[in-house]
Length: 467
Image (cartoon, rainbow, N blue to C red; front, side, top):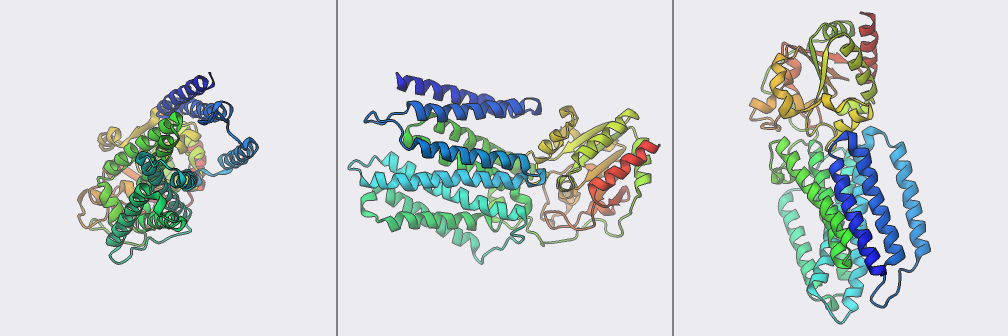
């Protein structure tokens, strides 16, 4: 009877995972979807504690330690979610994703000893243990490097001489060691499996360190899929349906998102992982127009936007850094009251993680209907009166369309430069995350509005209100 109850609980949890993931696709239902998935996970954990039995009919032991660990993790997670700034959300995602990979790796380390000591060595079990160990370790160390890059702790992206060859040799050695341990666990000492663990961690570091900052959305998605796969192998190992379902969902979603991010940059995954695109401090300058960028005052910008028919706002990471999402929404409402049609153009890789700008604007209660993706809004830029670029850079750089020497050549961009007037809000003329200069700044229809985004928008609100 207990076995049946456990299976039913796992089935319900799996269904809630699927429904919750589906609801995450729309801001109006995302909160409910997140709660449903969290409830499913909680129900699965509780059911496991209460009803799981091993082959000997024994229940789970050390319940006190388990509850204490859940309580500690719950407190840390709650405080982190409440206190983390929106600008730090990508770092938190990388950190939490790394913790998932670490859990999968530690489970495999523990289970390997039981596997090696048993008389029966089913090869499927051994391969699941090794896959969880290798993938989980890579996900953990790679996520920690991604965290360091996003946090600004690691500002450079060094590439070792013959780095691709070294990485290939390391991963081949890792896979070879995993296969050896899976087939002959009884002949390997503890140092071998811990050595494999160390080499896997090393590969995660070597794998992510050379990747430039502008490719972080792709890396985060890929590492997320790694953690999902590691969890799925844990499900195979324990014959646990809910671990298997959750891991497959995370792995599949992360993989699909990685593909979508690569398409958004018009690059293959191999070029992201093995080429030197978007390394900070890389090539600067552009083959397009050069000269002196024209500056616009707050008053002139307020008048221009107030008397325009339509305005498109292009949000970028600078908007998140300045915490200006609420101010920009307030300004948009004021302009709408004056009869201006306002919409937001969201590039798929704007920000530091997939969906970063969508989450940022949703936090400010920007209507979802006003958010338009690149494919939908690009044809409308030519008939747009004013485009306000707030903290974005590379996603509106026209060099991507024509400059074959540019590192971002071929990346689909927002065609903001085709509007009648473009106003770019930036702190200064520094290059964007890809480390290259934006030739849009020197276009005849472009004007710069320098300063902190939030303070500048607050001045715009005051000026608009005075008209």
